Figure 1 (tube, rainbow, N blue to C red):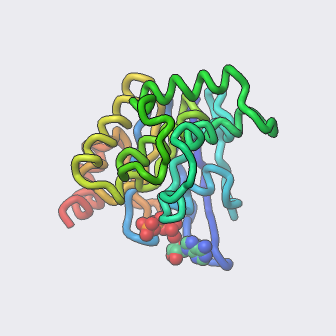
Figure 2: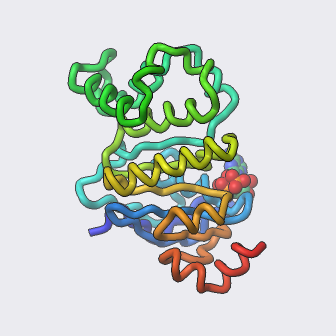
Length: 232
Ligand SMILES: Nc1ncnc2c1ncn2[C@@H]1O[C@H](COP(=O)(O)OP(=O)(O)OP(=O)(O)O)[C@@H](O)[C@H]1O
């Protein structure tokens, strides 16, 4: 069974279809990049998968024991988020909230989980530092740790490297690949960097409000749409 299947998803703003009849799936261990021009519906589709925006049609089906609240999500960063006046540790632990329900504190097991994730992402030494004093690359690593608190199965990343310099970008991609290959966490990443997408991902979804392509990266590189987009 697929980890996630989307069947004929349609989504609208003001009665206008901005995501139109999209079907695809993600298997355990997959690394799927969603590509397409500006305004092609990538972020809207991701919000639909997360249940943050209702679907106008179609279904999202979870398999392999995955529940929607166990998806780790790293949204596009905003200037306001970069100014969080709190410690690294608190930002990471805030990712535990879905697991702890409405409890106003984190239990010992949850705190241990967050500590393990900070260690894995080499954030332990930074844990008492102020989030807003970190570099852009460090901040993204903290927000990734926060997203990982929710999941051991599926990460959704919306343009995670858009504000990073080339070195921080390469480090971030290496970290995602490690989590995907070593920890077997499936990844869905929206990317504007098509060259990186075809290097990192094993599947590609190309949107233009409708589905232009869904398949393996090798098939995409052989396809007309893949050829045209990679050479543009
Ligand atoms: N809150 C909103 N209200 C109305 N229209 C919206 C809203 N958000 C997005 N749209 C429209 O929906 C369409 C898809 O937008 P979306 O942000 O999903 O595209 P995208 O592929 O993620 O774009 P980008 O690559 O620029 O981030 C666009 O035409 C956009 O203008």
